[in-house]
Image (cartoon, rainbow, N blue to C red; front, side):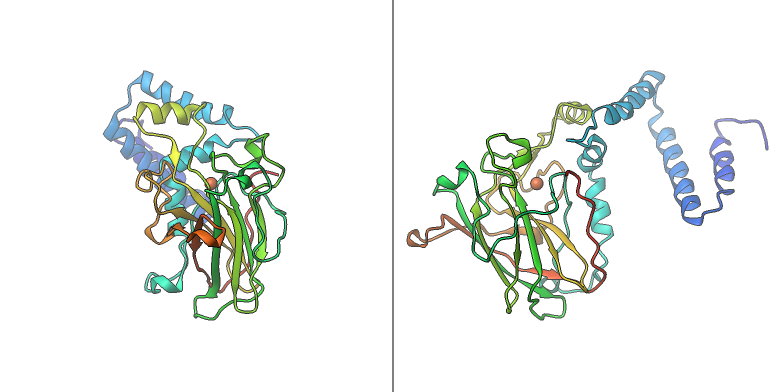
Amino acid sequence: MDFVTADNITQQVLEVMQRTPDPRLRQISTALVQHLHAFIREVRPTEPEFEAACAFVVGLGQATSEKKNEVILASDILGASTLITLLNDATPASTPAHDKTDAALLGPFWRAGAPEYASGQSIARGQEAQDVTQTLLVQGTVRSGAGETLADAVVDVWQASPVGLYENQDDAQPDMNLRGRFRTDANGRFAFRSVRPAGYPVPTDGPCGELLRAQRRHPYRPAHLHFMVSKPGHQVLVTQVFADDDERLHTDVTFSVVESLVGRFEQAAAPSGNAYTLHYDLVLQPGEMHFPMPPIP
Ligand SMILES: [Fe+2]
């Protein structure tokens, strides 16, 4: 090998990468070096900028705890998490929109073992249930991509409260509040009552918050419900459904709002007892049932 120069260093590093026996690791390492060196040649970081970049990465680890993963948050606010989710969607692109449901991020707030409820019951167990102006009835059908309705599918839902907090973030809410699991009936239908979720900010007390402020970006996610839908013989669907009247649909800090995931939160007629209704169908694709790791206990 020649002595190192600015001109030949990229090639030298790439040659070293070629010795990696595992082909996938070799591919990843090679592409990383190519893109990283091209980035450095384009941006030409100064030494203080390089120090600041290293401090940022160290800060991501330091700001990570059992309650918050700053590394995932960084990936979210750079759009990387959503891009990976969208690229991993194995449903053929030619599939008509009504034969598939787009996936969205699991997020940091899913808990395994949410309470099981009978169809039509409410997942609101706290004070928020008293506010009749925010009550929400959610109904839908779980179908297969081939169009058949799926009985006995599990619809696991979780959401933030009307003030934008998940129960594990808020001492005022009972344990497992606004979380629940429902089973579809013989016709694939599910229904549950709740309250409208509010949008909420991602944590801004770490390096990601500093970056968002420097980029003059707000830290909010638009209001949404999380769904995880499963039935043996099908891929687990993890997605989010967004409130169509949220003013931040086009500025979600995590870039999660795919058009098909916007749900109509309709104001219900007065005697129904529900302030709002949402009708949203969920479509599963055939495959293996594999659940994600719960991000929190
Ligand atoms: Fe969420």
